[in-house]
Image 1 (cartoon, rainbow, N blue to C red):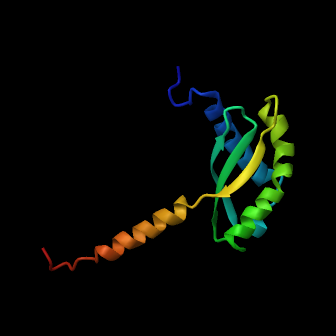
Image 2 (image 1 turned 30 degrees about the vertical axis):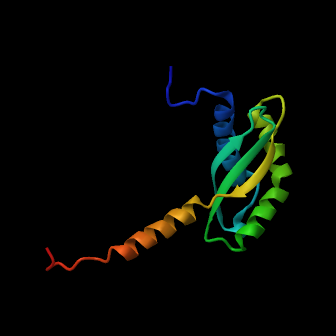
Image 3 (image 1 turned 45 degrees about the vertical axis):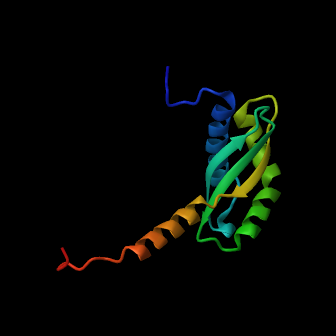
Length: 124
């Protein structure tokens, strides 16, 4: 038994959706006008009918709210390609949500580095 794979079916489907959505974005749907979009995680309901897809954007061209709105408008296009690749009874509704964890961790790192100024080589 492989312990690296999640046991619960929604967790397995969420991982599969994350992988497929990344492939769809690189092959079928051009997101270059939004910046460098990466999909970080997926949370799916237990009935597998709705999936929240979390994303982050490196060097966003428009504002994060605009990127979120555009991705949600493209959700039907993502579902079109997701359905045949996923092979479950219902293709879940996709809701794209900006993942703020990357920005939060960068902010925390900056705050911590401001608290601990670099030491001089002469200090012991």
